[in-house]
Image 1: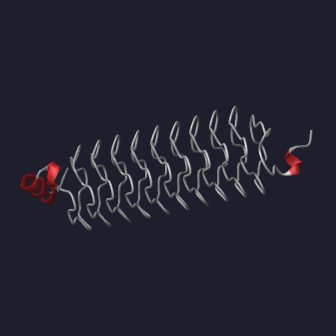
Image 2 (image 1 turned 90 degrees about the vertical axis):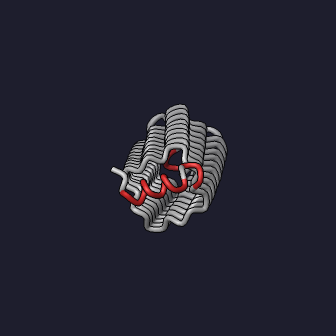
Image 3 (image 1 turned 90 degrees about the horizontal axis):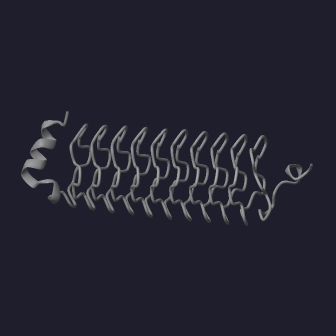
Length: 229
């Protein structure tokens, strides 16, 4: 249930008048903020666990170290927002716009990012273990050292994304577009790459043991041991 602070805040300002609000450390668990205007709001270290922020506008908002476990951001605009080390465990971000968002070190364990837009987003060091990122647009996203073990990335666009030293063991990348993707040093053990496009993907130093359905034609720097019959 939303706390008294949330109710007073919404009653006083309304959902459409929260732009640039200072909500640092606010306790907003289970808050009903669907469609709210939170552009440029400061929600650093706020607790929004279970909150409903569907279709909310959080463009340029600050959510660093915020607790967003099991929150709903479906269709929300989080473009250029900062979510450094935010906890988004099992959060729902279906079709959310995270273009240019900063998610360095964020926890997205088992989060649902289906069809989300993450073009140019920084997810370096992020935890996406078991996350559903199917059909998401990660064009030119930075996923350096990110953990994507068992993540679902089917039909996702990872064109020119940086996945160097990323952990992708047992990830599902069927029909994914990995054109020009940097996979240097990436761990792809037992990943499913059936029908994935690896044209000009850089696989120097990648671990490919047990990879399923991979077609390395057009890929760059494939370790020689994986090319032997």
